[in-house]
Image (cartoon, rainbow, N blue to C red):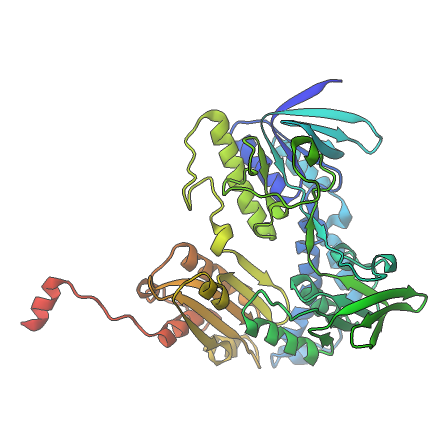
Length: 486
């Protein structure tokens, strides 16, 4: 059997895998992507792009209905068929021809099939027709296979054939009723989407809603979902699920039963590492892969893991960020160039620790970055928390009638820099990058006073947060003190 050599082999041709291969090729190495589904991966076809497309139309309609002048022009209801058609367009009807064209144009090779590690720096690919191809890596193998929905151990759930996130975002017709198990981002976003479509939605969460965020985020999203007609059951345990010709029956620990046409499970993720041949190199199949900040798997000098599989930050943009660092450091190590692996260096994913931005596209949106107040306290920081109501901003009045929301800034009192920020309100995702820059750059509060927000915009919240915190007392130099005294 012939073995084909490349400098870098990448298992998984999603957004993270594509970026590793692209950076390697730009650095002068050869690279091959191994993919057994669609090139472009989960985000392009079943996650970020289709889910946000499904959410956008309902959001735009609600905003228009809240603005006099526009409200009078909106005379119909949401056209769900048109929304689904736009979703189909955004995912290219689940064809990856365009992505394959990009891969070819970037000088990256592509091998279709299931790739399994069969030895150090060796991957064997089994195609759909059963034929095999052996690939050898001169320098590195990178695992970028992503994650799958985690199915909780609930009696009858698996037999009930529940939806996962893929089924929800690729739906061809909207059910009259939908039950959702989970209280995280996927659960909250899909509840928002299907309420907008007119489904009768029941969300069942074992604990709270969006519990990893500032408490007010989950509270505001909860209020909105209930106001729009969703039933939200918090701190509720599901004991059994049964599917029949009439739909799905979900039995709860309190003895009540929820009945819906379909059930969506959104209770977490599991790594796609079960069938990668990890046991051939001494790793455990089905487990998350632990890496250092250069994304090299612990204990190996040739194996890397980027994206969801390393569990550092299960977000597409963080996976791409990791991939850029990994691709560049693979090139540096392969060519003998200097490796910059100190915090915030070229070849590390430092932001994964305390500077991860995320937008949850609920109604209202939740945009957050850095540490929550609770996480900052647990990390040992001496903090001060500053809140501001977004609805009192002039930019909020201009945006739409009834604009409401909350902003929070978490300040490290020792260094006088921002540790975290959370915004909840309409379209607040566009505020997030300014907060991300402030945190990554460790911009002192006294310097942030000179970052003047434009008026009238919602970004004026930065000035109001600083005013609520209080302007630092200027420190005068010795010469200035002498002049003042004279």
